[in-house]
Image 1 (cartoon, one colour):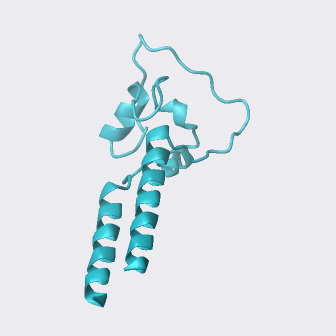
Image 2 (cartoon, one colour; image 1 turned 90 degrees about the vertical axis):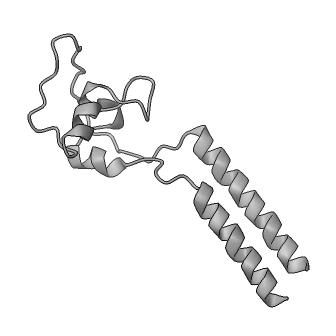
Image 3 (tube, rainbow, N blue to C red; image 1 turned 90 degrees about the horizontal axis):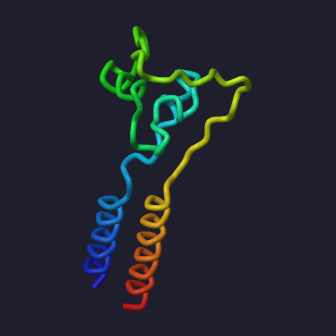
Length: 113
């Protein structure tokens, strides 16, 4: 009976890891370049990239040698330093909460067996 419960717990943990988001934000890129996220992401927000973001991704995560095309409008340099935070969209938070609640229900079910 204990093996059955252990197998169920392992299965639930495997499902949890399978459905958890792999990457929700990579602030280390923003910190490396000393830029805020909108510098490389489109106005629609992540994960859409603008011209700089596409260049950054295709050139081994480096902006070295980047020259904006004449059609693109330059964004002003930030006047003050802003803290770069981790941003999660509604889908990430909702899916994590769903998985957490599902895991809790399975845990309670296993305990009651």
